Image 1 (cartoon, rainbow over the protein chains, first blue to last red):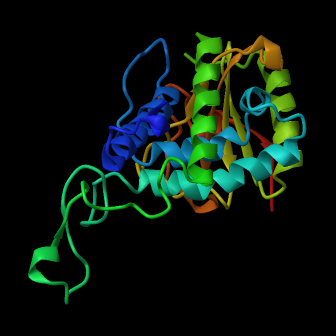
Image 2 (image 1 turned 60 degrees about the vertical axis):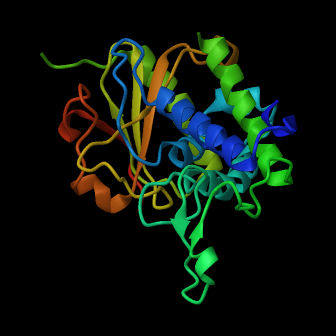
Length: 149
Length: 106
């Protein structure tokens, strides 16, 4: 399990995690008989949002009540957005792949550039509760993919 | 060649829509696009995320899931109300005129 690996840096774990969520969501954007990979943006958050409409996702997540499932997914969306925001695309910002400029204009010279290796990604440790919940949801989605295969 | 809607697909779509509408009353218009063996839905949802890939709509595809009572493959996309006039239906789904407006919201 990625979260229990102690010899892997947080930035590497987050990079794998962000890529996994992106590829998983893009898999659902791909029609199996065409097999053409859809080059779209922001697939994961949109997938989490759409999953609210899917009874098979609700069932694999072990929710009998639709309203409880809706609340569960709604609670996941901010975390999904935080994970999607880890993509390095766009203006320089915290991401697990490339260094970025420190937004603090008064930072010491040595701190002008922040590297993923040294950044602690607040709120995004894989042991944090909301990340653990997201990991579980991701696991359920892969379980669904297995069932549909 | 015009795409026709399988009545069984329509019936299955209505079941999905019924559950979704109960759970999310904010859903507005719901469009069902014709297909022989696939449920093709576009929901107009004021809480949807803005489309970043205009003018195309990219739905999510789900397989059959007999355990969940889903006997057809299905595809679904969520769009904002204002995007109805600016986005194209997914490739192969036809035009907006080909779709049946199942639910017309406010």
